[in-house]
Length: 158
Ligand SMILES: [Zn+2]
Image (cartoon, rainbow, N blue to C red; front, side, top):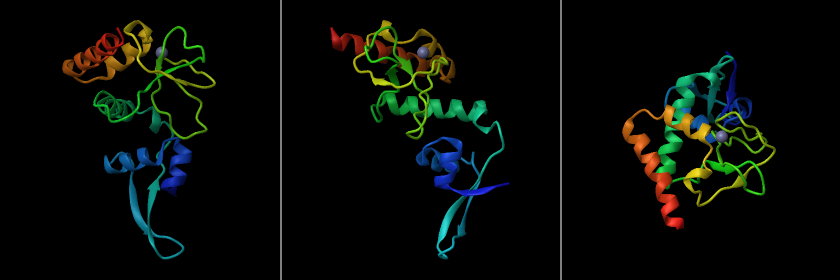
């Protein structure tokens, strides 16, 4: 089992350092504090085996967390436009990761860049992304909250 710093784990797993720390707190990544070259204790992460990122539990767990933060207004929207002219549908970006990441939308679409989406009306959300988000939400109450959130945005616009 390879052991690396949080920074290196962030690069190798293509996750933010905050995400790595969250996975450590959740016990989904194994980490210990070990003395570094300077003698100071630093976190050392055990790199998980291949396929760890595909683990359904991890990705659904993360989606759930980002959704909670999103509807509570804690974080920026995860909905982005795939084109600069903001036509068609806005899609859900599962994890922006570190800067080099190619944006990957929940429905599988990949684009070169993303453009910020604000004040979306309900029909501007990608139906496939909505279906994927709703499928990942673990209770009817959360799905209702997500629907109310989309409607609320539209009403504020009009
Ligand atoms: Zn989509």
